[in-house]
Length: 228
Image 1 (tube, rainbow, N blue to C red):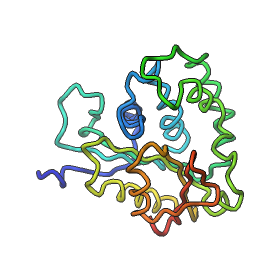
Image 2 (cartoon, rainbow, N blue to C red):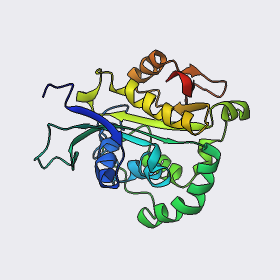
Image 3 (cartoon, rainbow, N blue to C red):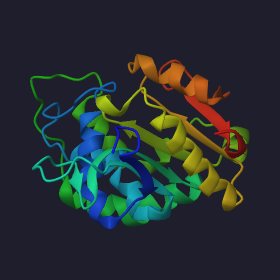
Image 4 (cartoon, rainbow, N blue to C red):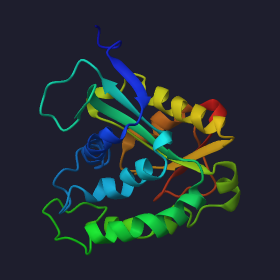
């Protein structure tokens, strides 16, 4: 089996949960590895990955390398090694309400307070990350209502470094866009860390456009689901 044919994009399974969390951490420092950056490695996925697979598992898709199994790597799942994902929610406003009611209480139980500052001293501080876990309204705060009407869904996409530059990001976004379009959702938006210098070029290539809500500190891009 060659390197390309060993790769499969498939729907998320509950057994992928820990590997999804691991990828989130390994790509969370401006696209680089954030393990050890915060006091608890579970904090980042509890904000930017696991709520999505909890709320809309049918809008989560993963890339699996079927040849890479039989190791102790945390990315290994039932059918290979998970090397990337796209996670989405079809209605950001509804997701905010769900998060406030269902996710915030469990998040606070797992992370009752801000942890000790680590030597990494990230620009995105642990206090800010913890606050974002308890403040789902941040996802709509500052967004132009017109942008939210046109692009009501939003997504997160992450690929480990060895999976990048192989066309997998485009395929993941297309897969999610097809699933959203089948639900009648016309557009999806995302924001990204401006420190991740490769992100904007990637999104531009996919056809994302800058929205009126975008700021230098928090870029916001949108894509009609028919163009992913």
